[in-house]
Image 1 (cartoon, helix red, strand yellow):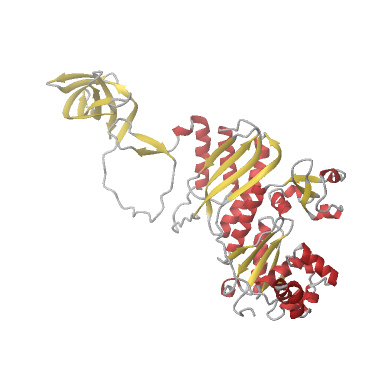
Image 2: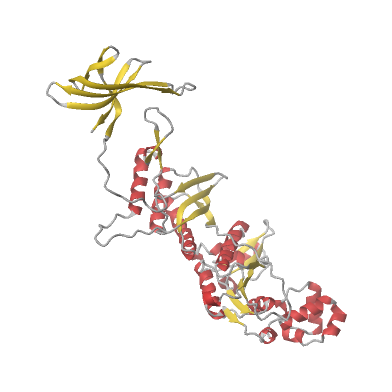
Length: 504
């Protein structure tokens, strides 16, 4: 008998190949669609939607038979899209329990969820089933959810539910009653077992449960005992959980090659809706998005977008991807699209009561993307110092907001500031005892009052960027009494003086 502390939910989705393909094609859901499997000309229907079924299309039809129907959308089966959709559904199930068992079949999605002890988190079994169904429907999949104390009962009831019923909770002790009216096909029978029960006139699980156990074992062996226990809701089960991984990824294969950027962004917008929805379900945001475009002819075009702060603003991501693809357009038509997102924590800004409103960080990201499109990728960012004494020893890196507790801002003491001159300006210097005593800068003559230096630095002797510098910090006065605090550099290899910075 089943332990009374056990409680299982079953998530069941029929016609899974068709649902996986139509999930990111909302404009096709109102049209009759079939999914073909196999190599031409031996293709056969492996999945179809309700509107195609109303046209009398059935599984196993050949391509020649399908072509006799007008206004029928024909799609090719995609195992890659199905695997991505299965991962999404397992992620949805994992949001309600860490113990999920995968029981998928060829054209159906089926998983069992151990929900014992979750009542304090999600309420009653009915409330959990409705919440799980809404979560699955939000990602574009039509499914059924059943709950029972017996694992196999939940699976059989899910397979036998009528089309207009999406949720069913079997009360403890009513497993046999709930199973009695289901057809014998709700069990995973072999062809021999199906033929045997048909000869005996057994058409429902209730009729199978009423057979005497000893006589059934004598004719069918231990398989007969197991099938009878399944029909009575008494079969035990060793739960084998898998670990659902949170991978924010979406894939779609286009029906025809796409060349226009506007058409591409329309499909990308639907995919972003799903990524943002899944991220919000885990109280996360999208920190970065990598778009992978499969080109006509087999090429791959990949671009990555990372704003300063994680965001769930769809319009922001659309604009950033638009600007990035305009700056780096693909070189051929696009036949498939992939989006891979990196999750990040949602950003929160708490302002004081009288603090001014800060500008939206999204505006900065869009502005930087526009500037990059004009001046180039390597000319926008924040300066990052390199471990070198060479002049201009820095590089540009992406803007990023550091995590952690911000440091307290006090009243800093006044400090000397330096204005770097780019490019450095030539200067003409007069030396006395190897020290500068006078120079001309901006057509003015300056007499040196104080000279500090020289500081010698050299490096990169191993490549073409060999440099050698002699730096001086000078305090000089002009004839009109103006004082200049400056930094001058001499290149001994060229015997050339340059004004590199002014001190304020």
